[in-house]
Length: 215
Image: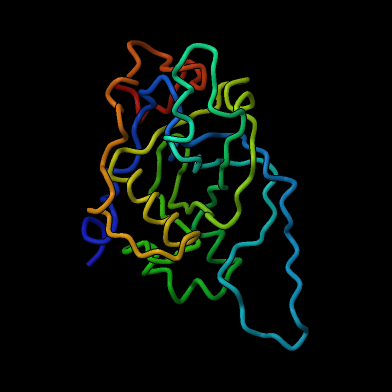
Protein backbone atom coordinates (compact mmCIF):
# COMPACT_ATOMS: atom_id res chain seq x y z
CA UNK A 1 0.00 0.00 0.00
CA UNK A 2 1.37 3.41 -0.90
CA UNK A 3 0.51 6.57 -2.88
CA UNK A 4 -3.18 6.78 -3.60
CA UNK A 5 -4.08 4.84 -0.46
CA UNK A 6 -2.24 6.62 2.36
CA UNK A 7 -1.31 9.87 0.66
CA UNK A 8 -2.19 11.60 -2.62
CA UNK A 9 -0.71 10.34 -5.86
CA UNK A 10 2.37 12.21 -7.03
CA UNK A 11 0.29 13.78 -9.80
CA UNK A 12 -2.10 15.24 -7.21
CA UNK A 13 0.37 17.61 -5.56
CA UNK A 14 1.57 20.52 -7.68
CA UNK A 15 -0.23 22.96 -9.94
CA UNK A 16 0.44 26.36 -11.44
CA UNK A 17 -0.61 29.27 -9.18
CA UNK A 18 -4.19 30.14 -10.02
CA UNK A 19 -5.55 32.15 -7.09
CA UNK A 20 -5.45 35.90 -6.53
CA UNK A 21 -4.63 35.19 -2.90
CA UNK A 22 -2.54 32.86 -0.77
CA UNK A 23 -3.54 29.33 0.22
CA UNK A 24 -1.98 27.09 2.82
CA UNK A 25 0.38 24.82 0.92
CA UNK A 26 1.69 27.46 -1.48
CA UNK A 27 5.37 26.94 -2.36
CA UNK A 28 7.76 29.91 -2.31
CA UNK A 29 11.40 30.29 -3.27
CA UNK A 30 14.25 32.21 -1.62
CA UNK A 31 12.75 32.20 1.87
CA UNK A 32 15.19 33.21 4.63
CA UNK A 33 15.56 30.55 7.31
CA UNK A 34 19.02 31.61 8.49
CA UNK A 35 18.02 32.64 12.02
CA UNK A 36 16.81 29.18 13.00
CA UNK A 37 18.93 27.32 15.60
CA UNK A 38 21.02 24.58 14.02
CA UNK A 39 22.91 23.18 17.01
CA UNK A 40 21.40 20.35 19.01
CA UNK A 41 22.75 19.75 22.50
CA UNK A 42 22.57 16.19 23.83
CA UNK A 43 23.90 14.37 26.83
CA UNK A 44 27.37 13.06 25.97
CA UNK A 45 26.23 9.54 26.80
CA UNK A 46 23.15 9.73 24.58
CA UNK A 47 23.70 7.71 21.41
CA UNK A 48 20.13 7.51 20.16
CA UNK A 49 19.90 9.58 16.96
CA UNK A 50 16.88 11.83 16.53
CA UNK A 51 14.59 12.03 13.53
CA UNK A 52 14.52 15.82 13.23
CA UNK A 53 16.66 17.53 10.60
CA UNK A 54 18.76 20.22 12.30
CA UNK A 55 20.98 21.22 9.38
CA UNK A 56 21.58 24.84 8.48
CA UNK A 57 19.32 26.49 5.90
CA UNK A 58 20.11 30.08 4.91
CA UNK A 59 17.69 30.57 2.00
CA UNK A 60 15.50 27.89 0.47
CA UNK A 61 12.07 26.79 -0.64
CA UNK A 62 9.32 27.26 1.91
CA UNK A 63 5.82 25.84 2.26
CA UNK A 64 3.14 28.17 3.62
CA UNK A 65 1.32 26.63 6.59
CA UNK A 66 -0.72 29.60 7.81
CA UNK A 67 -4.35 28.41 7.60
CA UNK A 68 -6.09 29.75 4.51
CA UNK A 69 -9.05 30.91 6.59
CA UNK A 70 -6.68 32.95 8.77
CA UNK A 71 -5.76 34.95 5.66
CA UNK A 72 -9.39 35.27 4.56
CA UNK A 73 -9.46 39.06 4.48
CA UNK A 74 -6.57 39.22 2.03
CA UNK A 75 -8.90 39.23 -0.99
CA UNK A 76 -10.48 42.49 0.11
CA UNK A 77 -8.87 45.58 -1.45
CA UNK A 78 -5.91 46.89 0.55
CA UNK A 79 -6.61 44.80 3.64
CA UNK A 80 -4.95 41.82 5.26
CA UNK A 81 -6.07 39.62 8.12
CA UNK A 82 -2.63 40.19 9.63
CA UNK A 83 0.81 40.94 8.14
CA UNK A 84 2.55 37.67 9.04
CA UNK A 85 2.86 34.30 7.34
CA UNK A 86 4.32 31.06 8.72
CA UNK A 87 6.43 28.90 6.42
CA UNK A 88 8.43 25.72 6.94
CA UNK A 89 11.56 24.77 4.99
CA UNK A 90 11.35 22.32 2.10
CA UNK A 91 14.48 20.15 2.04
CA UNK A 92 15.62 17.35 -0.32
CA UNK A 93 14.68 13.99 1.13
CA UNK A 94 18.18 12.66 0.45
CA UNK A 95 19.71 15.45 2.56
CA UNK A 96 17.36 14.73 5.46
CA UNK A 97 18.09 10.99 5.34
CA UNK A 98 21.84 11.56 5.19
CA UNK A 99 21.77 13.94 8.14
CA UNK A 100 19.20 12.06 10.23
CA UNK A 101 20.22 8.44 10.71
CA UNK A 102 17.06 7.43 12.54
CA UNK A 103 14.99 8.32 9.49
CA UNK A 104 16.81 5.87 7.22
CA UNK A 105 14.92 2.96 8.77
CA UNK A 106 11.58 4.71 8.19
CA UNK A 107 12.08 6.22 4.75
CA UNK A 108 9.62 3.75 3.22
CA UNK A 109 6.87 4.95 5.55
CA UNK A 110 7.68 8.52 4.65
CA UNK A 111 7.82 7.96 0.92
CA UNK A 112 4.85 5.62 0.51
CA UNK A 113 2.50 6.41 3.40
CA UNK A 114 3.68 9.83 4.62
CA UNK A 115 3.20 8.78 8.23
CA UNK A 116 6.32 10.33 9.80
CA UNK A 117 4.67 13.19 11.65
CA UNK A 118 7.48 15.81 11.72
CA UNK A 119 7.63 15.82 7.90
CA UNK A 120 5.32 16.06 4.90
CA UNK A 121 6.39 14.18 1.79
CA UNK A 122 6.55 16.23 -1.42
CA UNK A 123 7.18 14.69 -4.86
CA UNK A 124 9.44 16.34 -7.45
CA UNK A 125 8.37 19.56 -9.14
CA UNK A 126 10.30 19.85 -12.44
CA UNK A 127 11.86 23.25 -12.77
CA UNK A 128 11.94 23.80 -9.01
CA UNK A 129 12.20 20.67 -6.83
CA UNK A 130 14.30 18.31 -8.90
CA UNK A 131 13.89 15.34 -6.56
CA UNK A 132 11.79 14.14 -3.64
CA UNK A 133 11.58 16.70 -0.84
CA UNK A 134 10.03 16.97 2.60
CA UNK A 135 8.50 19.94 4.37
CA UNK A 136 9.99 20.15 7.88
CA UNK A 137 6.83 20.86 9.88
CA UNK A 138 8.77 21.25 13.13
CA UNK A 139 10.79 24.26 11.89
CA UNK A 140 8.34 27.13 11.34
CA UNK A 141 9.56 30.61 10.50
CA UNK A 142 7.58 33.85 10.62
CA UNK A 143 7.77 35.90 7.42
CA UNK A 144 6.18 39.22 6.53
CA UNK A 145 3.47 39.13 3.89
CA UNK A 146 5.31 41.87 2.02
CA UNK A 147 8.42 39.72 1.60
CA UNK A 148 6.41 37.13 -0.32
CA UNK A 149 5.42 39.65 -3.00
CA UNK A 150 8.41 42.00 -3.14
CA UNK A 151 9.82 40.37 -5.19
CA UNK A 152 7.13 37.81 -6.13
CA UNK A 153 8.25 34.42 -4.80
CA UNK A 154 5.36 31.96 -5.29
CA UNK A 155 6.42 28.98 -7.40
CA UNK A 156 3.43 26.62 -7.24
CA UNK A 157 0.30 25.73 -5.30
CA UNK A 158 -0.88 22.41 -3.95
CA UNK A 159 -3.87 20.73 -5.50
CA UNK A 160 -6.90 20.17 -3.23
CA UNK A 161 -5.97 16.58 -2.26
CA UNK A 162 -2.46 17.63 -1.24
CA UNK A 163 -3.74 20.68 0.64
CA UNK A 164 -5.97 18.36 2.62
CA UNK A 165 -2.98 16.12 3.29
CA UNK A 166 -1.14 19.14 4.70
CA UNK A 167 -3.97 19.77 7.16
CA UNK A 168 -3.88 16.13 8.25
CA UNK A 169 -0.11 16.31 8.75
CA UNK A 170 -0.26 19.56 10.74
CA UNK A 171 -2.95 18.12 13.00
CA UNK A 172 -0.86 14.99 13.55
CA UNK A 173 2.32 16.86 14.42
CA UNK A 174 1.15 19.97 16.27
CA UNK A 175 -2.09 18.62 17.73
CA UNK A 176 -1.17 14.93 18.07
CA UNK A 177 -4.59 14.28 16.52
CA UNK A 178 -5.25 11.39 14.15
CA UNK A 179 -7.57 12.82 11.51
CA UNK A 180 -8.77 10.91 8.48
CA UNK A 181 -8.44 12.81 5.16
CA UNK A 182 -12.07 12.09 4.31
CA UNK A 183 -13.12 13.99 7.44
CA UNK A 184 -11.48 17.18 6.12
CA UNK A 185 -13.20 19.24 3.39
CA UNK A 186 -11.45 18.92 0.06
CA UNK A 187 -11.90 22.58 -0.86
CA UNK A 188 -11.69 25.84 1.03
CA UNK A 189 -14.87 27.79 1.65
CA UNK A 190 -15.51 30.12 -1.30
CA UNK A 191 -12.44 28.77 -3.11
CA UNK A 192 -13.92 29.16 -6.59
CA UNK A 193 -14.40 32.89 -6.02
CA UNK A 194 -10.65 33.46 -5.71
CA UNK A 195 -9.62 32.28 -9.19
CA UNK A 196 -7.55 34.77 -11.17
CA UNK A 197 -8.68 35.88 -14.62
CA UNK A 198 -5.21 36.28 -16.07
CA UNK A 199 -1.51 35.86 -15.43
CA UNK A 200 0.28 36.59 -13.18
CA UNK A 201 -2.41 35.26 -10.91
CA UNK A 202 -1.51 37.65 -8.09
CA UNK A 203 1.22 40.01 -6.82
CA UNK A 204 2.89 36.94 -5.30
CA UNK A 205 3.58 35.38 -8.72
CA UNK A 206 6.51 36.25 -11.02
CA UNK A 207 5.95 36.58 -14.75
CA UNK A 208 7.43 33.15 -15.37
CA UNK A 209 6.47 29.80 -13.84
CA UNK A 210 8.21 26.42 -14.21
CA UNK A 211 7.73 25.03 -17.72
CA UNK A 212 6.11 21.90 -16.30
CA UNK A 213 3.30 23.95 -14.76
CA UNK A 214 2.42 26.17 -17.68
CA UNK A 215 -1.07 25.72 -19.03
